[in-house]
Image (tube, rainbow, N blue to C red):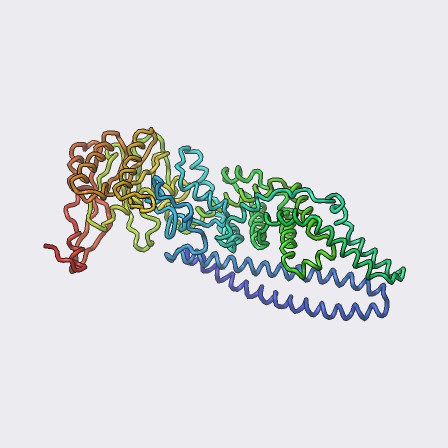
Length: 601
């Protein structure tokens, strides 16, 4: 995959050189055309006023199209830069570097959630950061929401996988779509939400008059100058001054209303351009997967294929931003009552396009979500889309399952099956041998599977609707006045309540009751272990305490022992991270402590 992205990047760099030459040439042509045109027009007016007027019209039309061509080239250059940024980020991710240009989802972190903190779903170096290709608040929230939900409908999961596959295969389109949004800073992700909440402006004083006056004000100016020319009106200065004062009066009459309203729409023109480009790409693409067709059924395709309404909206916003420049504001208001007229235009746009942005951002968000999953699938073609079942005795059947967040070249994969004959699995092993990582491997792939995403496995079959409950990363909290042991009590309470709620859970438990003395730890651990077995729970328990394996011997029809081991070579510990059936016989804490200089008696 790296080679593909590098090839695309090379092509973009070559294309950028061509675009840059065109851009520089157009800049030169525009300057020459402007200077030469003004000189010719002035000379022609001296010869014949009518001929000068005709030449002026041709000059203005020609200069307008030259400017538009220059702007189009500039836009193409910008899109080229955005695509390069995107490709460089994908190459970095494939080289095991952080996903640096997208949010890591830290704002969704919740240490009390039943699995998100233990499975590293949010925050730096998390699954969210690894997956996320969303720039809008709607897209980011949709990705987080799907990470935290376990899907119970087989039909919906199959539709999700269909959409993921479609976005994987639409590779060039997907890259263009993501590139159109990539320049939006993560700090401005909320911009999409702000835009969708913009309301129709309140009524203005003399609103009806201003609506029509805004349309005829160019004629008023023209009449003033024509009258001066033909009637030899010497008081033209008074006429101009009076009209300017009138415009400032109309502007000031509605100042309190317009200023409050403008605060709602303080969005950047650059963000709107990004949304406009993304929306056009969606409107001009056909999607075959059912879930995308359903999500985009109200997407305003017809509007976007002809005249893009976002461009009109963007122009209004850009003009309103110009008012922040005092000199520009004086000229704009002198020419017409600028602020109330633009406010009325905004109101007309919102009336003509009700719910427009809500549908736009809903469509962008759903495409960001499946583009994230499609990118993951494209970048990891050896990963599989899991299958789900409802009635079989097997809960998990995995071939070469691995942890997606471990550096690719270091990942060790395992085969594992969990069924009615080993509903509860006791995993023993030495320190750093891979017990906790294996529990997280199972949990995080279940999350991916329920999102409609590919999973890190050659094959994975899962029981439908199986929700992880984790008891792994337990910490104290001074702020919440909670000791480690209190935090563990709360988590055990959660496990006990989950055993009663009738839902299908898989319990992932790593070293119970670390916050108490060894005797109480053993008693409590054995009691919880027995409870899980007697309640027919589905569970994986990792521990250093071999005495828990005594319970396994009493329930051979439900419990199975697994272990991770290590070897030594030249005084160094070697881990293979492969899960094996049985009980671990060797531990390494003493060796590790001696290795750092602590002598063991």
